[in-house]
Image 1: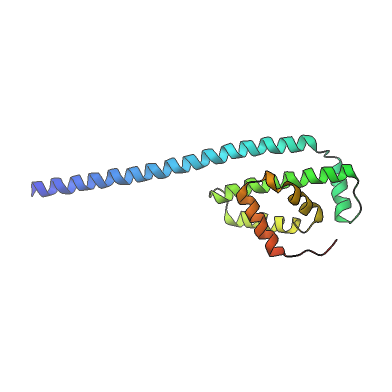
Image 2: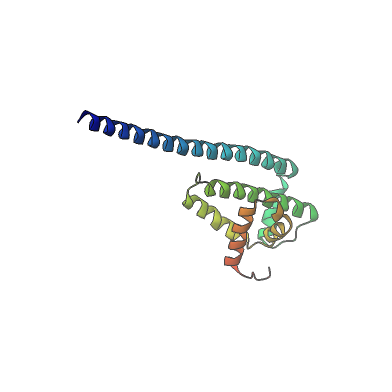
Length: 157
């Protein structure tokens, strides 16, 4: 009886150790993901600041207004709208990364996805994407290509 009780205690102890190790592994994985997300966020903020420094923030609202109303943009306005579009998509790329690793809710990502889909109907955004898609993550580029496939051919503006 005592031998049997000792065996049961040892089995329970071994199982407790295994369960503890599994939980430690899960915690380590989550910590690793959080560290990667934090590093990516810091890099994204640096990238965003670089784009912000290049943009003329006083010109952008005027240029966007002209673009939305099908008024021609001069070269300087086009340059700023392009930077603004890259800036937005850089943020979307980071949000998609956060979503992929489980730190961003699906409903939140789907809201961003709807914004991206509406933006991709704008020829200036499409031009930016054609010229700048190489600066985004491979996974985000695939997501945008899926969205473009959902939109289909766009009418001329």
